[in-house]
Image (cartoon, rainbow, N blue to C red; front, side, top):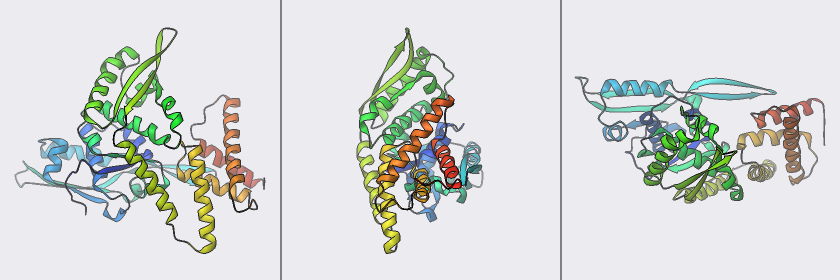
Length: 358
């Protein structure tokens, strides 16, 4: 059981799947911080240590001087948090709502007045969201970038900026453009009650910029983009990524070493090496996909191209072609494809059923 005290220099690894679920949750800032501290206390490569103890000092750091009754309510909200687990079966996908945590233990004094400690335990079903994240896209940042924030808007905006950097870490030339977002999209992402830029600027962006620039290692500015006299888009200019640059490099080195250290037999080792090399190439080209999705698509391409030799250039080109096919179909139909990976997998499954080979 993990029981070390809060260390603001601890690095958090968070899957983007979990990021999306937390963004849409109704949790308070204190409850979100509790989950962040949980993530900072675990070793993401040691799922057997999924039970974490929060001592009295931890509780005060997160919740302040909280009553037993209030803390019990907060922990219940955290336990009630559900995430969508997606299982693939041929041309179908099944969504199952699961609890991120399945257990809390709360200890307090006999008179019911003073909190002593509590524990949180990740559920078995949600392990893949929290541990061994190498096959998922994930963010890395230090706890100190979160723990002092008071506004939920600041918390979400900070993570949006970090997520954009993560998406384009292998293609930094596209990052500036990726740091733009339309006003209505930002309002929806941050779950604000405001529709117009004037209100978002006054009540959200200005306070967020002040808080993030003062309390995290990241510094940014922003400016409006107008069309026909009205602001329709906001561009963010990150002037300093702080320690996030170093953490990003550490992530790349960690993933590379984990790929290179996979043990296997001679033949499977060669195949795995080629697969990992191709997956990394495709990931560089299409950072919006997770490693898991790329591998699912790539394995189908292998079946369609069993005799294309040792190197994967033809298979990478095939990946490009099916992605382009999906994009053309989207444009032709005039309907947005929300999940490109699922669409491409379904497309390839149909080709496999038809016995197609390129």
